[in-house]
Image (cartoon, rainbow, N blue to C red; front, side):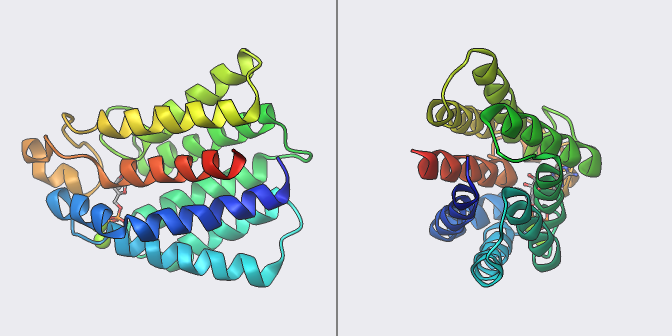
Length: 205
Ligand code: ADP
Ligand code: MG
Ligand code: MG
């Protein structure tokens, strides 16, 4: 998994999030403050620009640059959460990046979100898409699956995880203020996390 793949990941993620900006914002309108799509679209547009200008020389640089930009540019909980995840992933990766190395770094990234957000599986947050994706990567490594297939499986797990947030009651973030009224809606952060995973699977395929 070379440096160009990681740059392409953020370019594709920026494209998908721009495409689905209004859907993400609508999801956030139902159980939050209707800014998730615009927050991430703004952040990823900036990430794309910064990556194009900085010509990063390693996957670590790509991820830490993207993470720092998201922390700076995304107003809202999701910026620091995604930003910390990518920064932690970047710090953990060693080159050359193998699937096993990436799976391990991804897991560390998810742990960073869980720690910062004090969120666990089932709390109806982005963790509900990211943790299943991480588990799918770990299983793919265990089973000796190739990079493409592993990333496809991770993307599918993330989509399933995002859909699984619909019947959940939110325990973290703004949606938790709604109590039982948060039930019946997909979590916007879980939906965007699924887009990040779809983006990675697309550029690897
Ligand atoms: P804000 O809620 O500040 O407006 P966004 O709308 O950009 O920020 O992002 C909301 C998403 O962030 C939620 O849908 C959820 O997935 C995620 N999120 C919010 N708080 C937490 C938390 N404490 N832990 C994990 N994820 C969280
Ligand atoms: Mg919001
Ligand atoms: Mg907000």
